Amino acid sequence: MNNPDLEGYIAEIFSSIQGEGGTVRGSCFGKRQIFIRFSGCNIANGAFKSTGCFWCDTPQAQIMETEYLNYEQKPCSQEFERMKNPVKISEIIQIVENLITPDLHSISLTGGEPLYQLEFISELIKALNYPLYLETNGSIIPFENDLKELAKYIKYCCCDIKDKSSMAALLFNWENLVNNELEFISKMIHYGVETFAKIVVTSQTQIQDIQWISKKLSEIKYSNGEIVGLAIQPVSLENEDLKDKYSISISHLNEIFHTSAEYLNPENLTLSIQAHKYLKLL
Ligand code: SF4
Image (cartoon, rainbow, N blue to C red; front, side, top):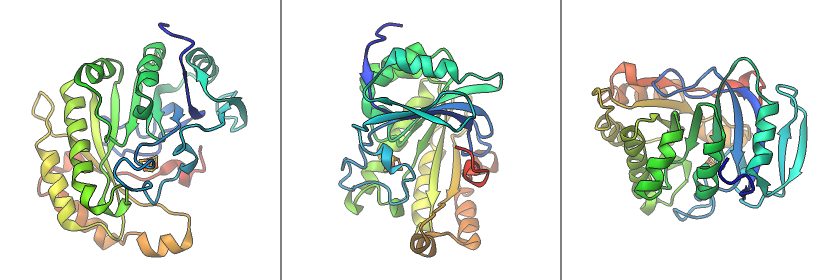
């Protein structure tokens, strides 16, 4: 371990099953993972002039300086202990070691936005000796050398493409945000990371936006010519008022799939659901 005393802010660490991502290349849907949820999110902090996605399901992780890290001490116990933040890399490794089970597939680095603490994550990944899965909003693009170094340790990556209706960016900034995300995906694939795009869709999702995004994605290819995958995830909301306004109809969802398929072939398209929510997993 290069720097075991380096400290960062982590909201949660627990063992569960990856419930998102569907069946495209790079997805770890259905696999046992240890989830390390980073605190802090650049988008919630106004990077694109908004206060974050309206459907963010981990608002506690939007704040960087979370007071405590909540962690499972025994895998699958769903019982949490807590530790004061910031925490050292060596402390995280100890928690992770206690959560290892025979079915462990990979470690998910999620958030918040994991790359918001770039120096910290860059050191942490060197100390985690398991396949790593990065879940990112794709809006932070590190300098080329840093990204190349990061990519050496990451095996899989799920990169969000924020639909306009997410409100992750103010309207005038939305194209910038998506262009950043597309660039991030393209670079990760270039550096050999199994990467796919995920878009959360709502009743407000515009078909012309899906067309634009799918066309851009169809230009991002692996070295063997395979096009990057797109996971389409219907928004899932608990608040009744939001549910009424934003839940997507089946016909709208079908239209989104048909539109994406004008540019991406069926092999590159998948439905993503938040299966962990249905099963009441963590
Ligand atoms: S990017 Fe992720 S953590 Fe940030 S506000 Fe959106 S959903 Fe929440």
